[in-house]
Amino acid sequence: MRKFLMITLAVIVLGLVSYFTFLYNATYSEGVRSGELIKVSNKGVIFKTWEGEISQGISGAQIFSFSVLDSEAEVITQLQEMEGQYVQVNYVEKYRTFPWWGDTRYFITSVKKVNSPFKIK
Image 1 (cartoon, rainbow, N blue to C red):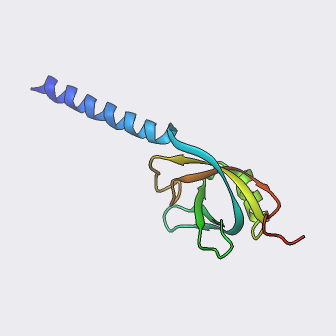
Image 2: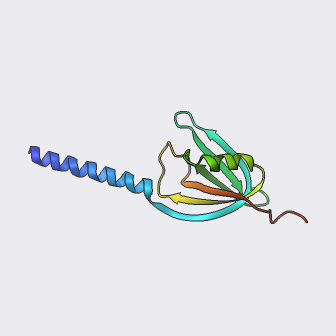
Image 3: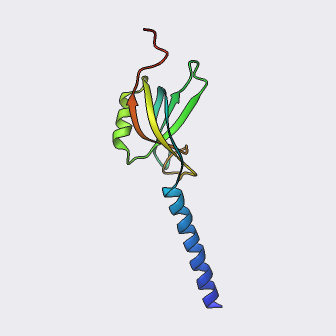
């Protein structure tokens, strides 16, 4: 009976480790989005995370919400400097997220300022 319990426990632990390793490393999709950066904030009670929003439409009806990992300090600084401007961001989408990562499944990996297509010349 003891051998059965040890094998069962080992299988459960291995399964949990595999599951969390998958969630940590696997990406569902990667892509690029652009729009007006309307918000960047550090929020949370227990876990402070960096969150932001990009308006992808003229009326602001299409909002892309994203998170930024704490390890991306340079990206966080760039986003804070570019708030209110038209930007293009590269992101990865995760299958799931951890509470200490952020509120969304979209994580920004880089950002650059681009010209707005709506600007009158």
